[in-house]
Every structure is written in structure tokens, then in C-alpha cells.
Amino acid sequence: MTPDAPPPARRTPAGPLSPSRTLATTARVLRQLRHDPRTLAMMLLVPCVMIALLRYVFDARPETFNSIGASLLGIFPMITMFLVTSIATLRERTSGTLERLLAMPLGKADLISGYALAFGLLAIVQSALATALSVWVLGLDVTGSPWLLLLVAVLDALLGTALGLFVSAFAASEFQAVQFMPAVLMPQLLLCGLFTPRDTMQPALKAVSDVLPMSYAVDGMTEVLHHPDLTTAFLRDSLVVTAFALLVLALGAATLRRRTA
Figure 1 (cartoon, rainbow, N blue to C red):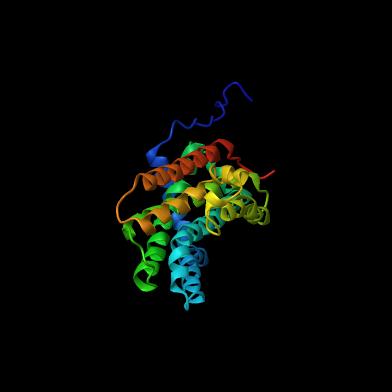
Figure 2: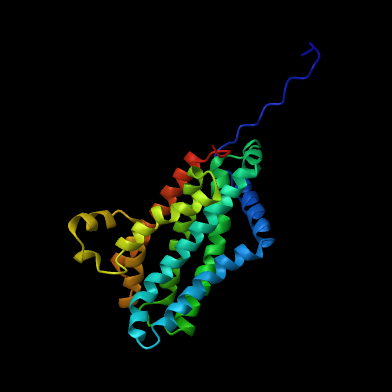
């Protein structure tokens, strides 16, 4: 370097979480998704198709659909958002987009929050479609308010989004990201109370189910299914699912890597 050469440009350090940077990231992700109709169709239509299929599988026994339909209304969006979010984020890393973004004055918290907000908006649309189809088209019998059902479905989809963002940091390929689904979601699916009441499980399994967020998602749906009013248990279950989603998002920001190993 000659004495008159300008000093090298230094990267401007990212400050704390910035609404403008978060919204810019959200807009970029939504623009990308707008040009990917197959991903949009998977996110918005697959849960509706699965719930409609379930309804007609139990066409001769509508009481079975009424007993498990609400629970699956929270589980299907969670699984769909987990898959789409983990693969989309990993694709950003493997293509080098993530590294270029983090070289700019963009913090990890801005990036994770932007992704969570973009996929969260889609999760709201997805949950609204699935809830409307279940209650007003397929005849799901709900004692409580369908709006509370929608609230839990949205929280479950947001939890799936947070889990997808988190596990993408540990996957080196899209194939590995898909492999995380049985590791992260299947144990929760078996222990959440969908197949048998959690109170009748072995004590060890019951203890494990008590710390898994999907258990509270299913319990919240069950509260709406059987109670006409807002219950304390419903508020507890909703807060637990929300807290899990925020905790996993924070862990996702802390473990975010620029590139795959």
C-alpha cells in the first residue's frame, strides 16, 4: 500500500435489531416467494388438501374427524412451514446470498426477524384458509370460537417457521434439512396426545411430552374444541407455544452461520 492510498473500507457494524432492515429483508423474501409459485402452492394448499382428505377418509364416522380435525389443523401448518422454511433458508446459504447479506450492515437478528415475519405472514394466510375450510366447508364441529382456533393455528405455523429457521443452521444440504423433520417433529407428533391422551402415557413419556411445544398446541386446540369461552388452560397453552417460538427464533439468530460447512 502506498502512503497516499485510501484506507481499506471497513464493514459498518450492524446495530441492534432495526425495523427498517427487518422490513427490507421481509420484502426481499416475499418478492422471491412471489416468483416461486410451486412453493407458495405447497405452503397454502397442502394443509387444506390434507385436512379435506382426512375429512373424507372418515366420511362414515364424522365424530372421528371432529375429535382429531382440530388437532391436525395445528399440526399440518407446523410441518409445512418447518419444511419450507428450513429448505428456503438453507438455499440462501448454499447459493452465497446469506454471506453477501451478512457482509452488509445487516445483523443476524434482522435477518432472522425478516425471514420470520415474511413466512409468518404466509403462515397467517395458510392458517386462515385451513381453518375456514375445516369449519365452514368440511363442517368441523367446534364449541368455541373459530377465531381462537385460527389463533392457535397461526401460532403453530409460526412455531414451525422458527424451528425450520433454527435447524437450517445445522444442515449442509437440502436433503439433510428434510432429514431433520423426523428427528424434530415425529417424536412430538407421537407424544402430543393426538393418538392417546397424554395423561394415560407412561410417566417418563408424559414428562417428555410436557416439555414439547406440540403438546401445548394440541391441548390449545382441544380447549377450543370443547369449551365455548376463553379458558385459563387455553391462555397457558397459547403463551407456551408463543414462548417456544420466540426462544427458538433467538437460538436461530445465535447459531446462524454464513455458509455451509
